[in-house]
Each structure stands twice: as C-alpha cells, then as structure tokens.
Image (tube, rainbow, N blue to C red; front, side, top):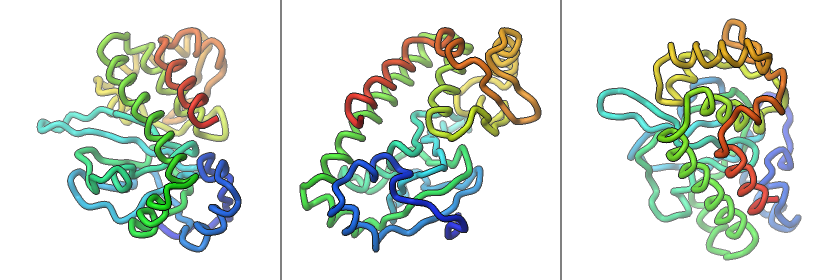
Length: 237
C-alpha cells in the first residue's frame, strides 16, 4: 500500500457519504488516502489492528486459511463499508486475513481516532453497527451457500458481489485466485467459468472476466446473492 496518487473523495465510500456533514468535517483531518495493489495484505490473523480502512475503489476479501494451507473467503468489502470491524467491536484482532482482491484506493483511520469517534455514540457509531449487521449476514449466507449450492451458482454469486463493488463490468481476476476465494479446486472454477461463457453470461480471457449478461448471471446465481444485497439495501440504503 502507498499514499494515494490520484484524487478521491469521501463520498466514493458509501458509508462515509451517508454521514451528516458535521461528522464528515470532524473525521476529514484524520483520514489518510491510500492506494492498494492486488494482493496487499491489510491485516494478518491474531495481530493487533492499527487502522480501519474505508475502501473507495479497492475491494478486499476476508479470508480464512486452514492449518493445511487451504483457504476460503468469508466476506467481501468494497465501497459500501469498512475493513477492520474488530477495532470497534472490542476484539482488536481477528483470526482471518484481509487481502486486496481488486486494486484501488481507500481511506485509513487510526484505531485511537476510531475509538474516540465510536464512543461519541452518534451517527458514525450507528452507521458502523448497521454495516456490521449487513456484513454478518453476508458471512453467514456465504457459509450456507458454500455448503448447499453448486460451484457454478457460487461463482455467479461471487461475480455479482464483486461487480457491485467495482465501476465496470470487467474484473481482473485469475481462476486460481477465484478458486482460493471459493475454497474449491482451480479445475472446478475453470469448468464453471466455461459453462458461463458458453451461455453468453461472461467472457474470460487471460485473467480478465467481463460480465456480458448481468440479468442472466442473476438468474443463474442462487438465492444467496439476493438475500445479501437486500439486507445491505435495507440497512445502509
């Protein structure tokens, strides 16, 4: 990660954009713009967190790694929310890892500044708690989805959640990375992606996935995508 080289605005993060102007003005001097590259690790398991991050164009995966090295994604955070909820939930650490899935920008807020703001018990606290409820829904639904639904449906859900957090229909992502996120073999992702491509829903070329037919992708996905999207809309607008 590095200081942001391109201008960005607080309203590029939906959670910040929804705050009253007086809260934004108070937070502004304490927010540092940063740019992430693909694969940046924002925090590691069981290590104290020093900052909370508000993504604007970056997308971050919350990933758990088993003792044997296998991984699976628990949740996805983009411009709708924050990375590092343990800082205001009282834990300070978490057993999972946060990895940048889509390169881009974010704002950083120090742990002391966050705690001071949270203890005001105002609009910032309410927004963070509402977001946490929405994120818990996403994590819970991911667990259900991974247990009950076919890989092709899970891939559609994952592509749609990612698309909701990026500015275009093109997503730069290798099949190996997607396999790690879904907790499946790369060959399984290759087969599922091929089926979606043959159906005219996506185009996949050398690490670039282009969504061609979003309604078709939504129709192929399981109900989990809709459950998560509706809960985020209900809680965050």
